[in-house]
Length: 224
Image: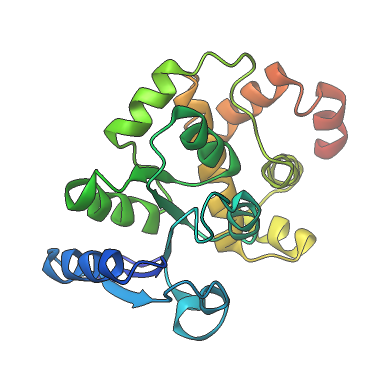
């Protein structure tokens, strides 16, 4: 996460050079500017070199035509990366699936500079950004049982309820505190999108109890 006043950095994974060039220009013109690393269509560059330390991953969901890479999105999210999906897909189902997998924002390539730059800034601090296309998708989504937490989000949440600090959670799960923060932030986003905001730990506990993520017995054992 970029600290207050520090340069935000993002790595873009997109197989269209013109798209990456346009995003670079928008980032350079932003106030303050955003540092952009262009990985082209090389997913490996997100994990190694300068891209590995970028605050945000701007991810083109379909590097291979007609083959949206939800698996790679899940891998990025599970590792604690903060992802903005930037896609040509305009259907609600794709947008909802990306958010369910843990992306902090979903933008279509029609939405451009006006929304991509704020989405990058929000993601860098661990917050979601809801562009118009995503807002419409969320309104139209009538799937019962939302929010749907990923297995990793559930694991981190349960560990946090049982621990006195995020540092202990990080040590137990062999991840960084930043990754713990990211997973908890995404859980809060999903509850907020479902109209059940959980701004504090106690509110998250209440939501988790309501949804069967954890039981009162388990909470009692954790406290003893």
